[in-house]
Length: 354
Image (cartoon, rainbow, N blue to C red; front, top):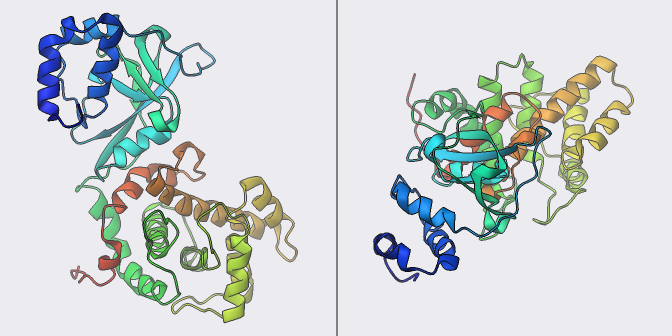
């Protein structure tokens, strides 16, 4: 069946679906459907009504406290509106992946449904936590507050970052990061995307950061993984990065911090790979910092972890609900569109004069 053109599969199924054994008709339909990028109303209502009538019993996602089930849908420029959509997901990470796969994600829809609206559920990331619903029955839904990856929005938030991105990004080339190969996710491109996301935050979040705060975010972006030696989970690579910075005496052009501010930057790098509870506890126990300074460090720590975390979209590893800062929660679709850009070439492009 995989050798048959998709348009012929759809046409043939719609001609002969009533001739297919009833116990097979749903699975055959779903095998075709899951290979389609955008369904776009290609299934007549009478076909879906018949096919769904013979769907086998299905497990259900975990219900909320009110008994209803929360489902998510990643949307792009060609997506059907939620009320006409068939495919949703029980996990927001899968929905985000679908929105980001073209680099033009527009929205994440969130709906609350009753169990009888669900036709089938395919749990697990390999099955994309897909929830098949009766189209036309979704009415209780809304959208996450995210900036769409659109030509009207992304250039606007990128414009004020480009000069600094080139200035500091060119330094990243000299730090020894390797360009990622197949199945590698921590390398020069990751560093550059975290830098760009940090600059987007600095220039657009409306956060009243001091100049030193801004420089700490940039310092973190470029150096947080300098000591990482594996793509596997590594809870010590923050400490290894700080040790390497000290050993090599690494200093970045344009970064002018006091001794205490370098110490703060090292604190954030050291603990960025630890869970929040551990990291915050370590910051709060750091001697020589006032309560107000520790609160500042924790705020920077959360921003840095969010900018690093946003680039987890590259391997479908971001649960955006776990982001800590309000503006970071608006950036997952922007983070997704950065994956489609030639970020290395952007270091050398000519920036138009404003």
